Length: 406
Image 1 (cartoon, one colour):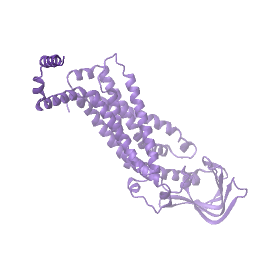
Image 2: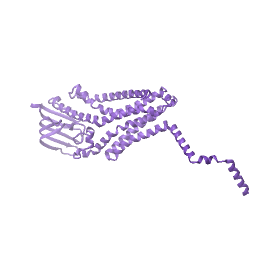
Image 3: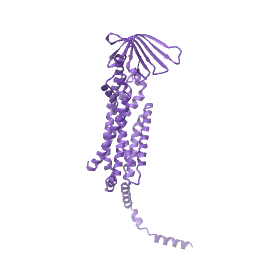
Image 4: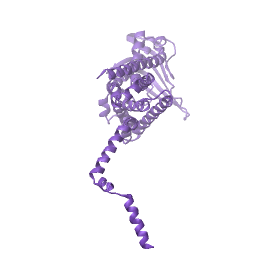
């Protein structure tokens, strides 16, 4: 790598890191503020609050990294052109591939980063976050809910107990779930306690009843029980069957799903879409490079506005992401849709590459093409025939023919 390529790479990397850190920090702070209830309402420490919110950073980086790459490439190319450096490079005969090479190196690094996050880091962070949420809710029930008070554990979930018994047990328990307005579930029990089975917290209720009130029916369903284990995972936002969501499962689990699991069978489309999403996401980095370089890779004078080119590149990126979301939804419905998840970024990369080739290397390619056609022309013998072509002699023969006819 020569000095010119190192200069371009250094500028692009600096812009990429600045955008990545700034955007990630802004979005992380915005999301962290929504979780302050962990400290103020659920009695958790600041360290637990930071650990809880930091687990969402891999997902943020996965989304922000291609956008930061796009902004960095546009910024670098615009800076090179604004300082007339890009014009001098083209005038000095620097080939476009040499200018593209530093951006390609950065793009490969971003693609590797996104692949590592989507395939390994992000699923682990989501699973840890899921277990942590259940643990925090279990801690709230056993440690931070005061006797005789009705406390909202989550939106639509109310918990109450009369007093604490020996060994950490609770007495006089009332638990109500109103997240589904059409189906209200109420648990009443004489006593209960939190137990852990395979690191999964359960709220075991003893000698109680379960009442379900369906608004479409006049009578409530009432069930009495001696013992009932309530999975604390049910207090999460997952309204489906109990189990890790597709995004919380490892890539190996997605590649070999357990079809004996009812949840897996019912959500097999989402498992398929999540698997191919992880492998197709790194391809968007190359599509991003192609779109940005096709828009600003050509040197322009100050009279040639670059605002329209930047706007066109932004619209192309928006269309690319919308097409990616559409392909992902199609993969949920059918296995053929998974192919679209790879075709969208690959097709965008090819189209952008053809645009770069046509705008950058067209003169040299046309010169070589004309030279090749001229060589074929001479080798075919047509040149010798044309050389013997005499227009004056042909006109004399035509006039003699007319004289004979007259």
